[in-house]
Length: 185
Image (cartoon, rainbow, N blue to C red; front, side, top):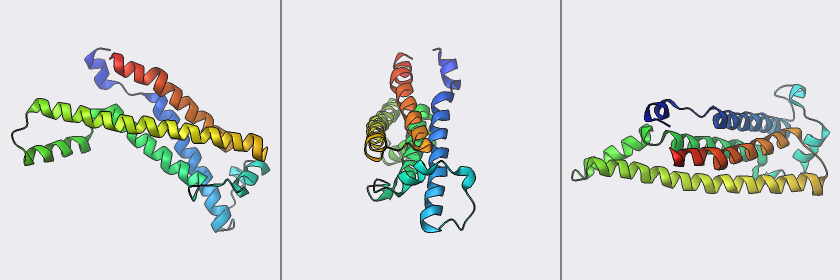
């Protein structure tokens, strides 16, 4: 891809998928908090009602992950995933990275401009490794929750399945297309 096109490239598909993940998790987190902590006194959320399967999944012993309700864990995880993907995509253009490098250069005036670029690329590579590890971990957690839903609870929550399928689509897009595209360009 020419440098001019690369400068204006914005990956709509992965950000759209991440948006679905965040919104879906926010809806589930709202439903979970409303159901457990406020006993449905905040509002009538029957318009957000899934089925009795969703409520049964929410009431199961598997509704917590590391002591955190799974919808809240998903909301935090998917927001973090979106943040890290943004850092990777925008790379050296990210203001936090530029500020960090400028602060380090103020402390060490001997560093060269080429060193700045190498440091930024190194920082982005670190974020990318953490991002990919985190993404694989989330996919494994989603697979384990699908196993629990299908084989232990024998229920299917439509909102949960939307999150799992969207996460799988995002991971496939990232590893099959986006990562290859960014390496080739």
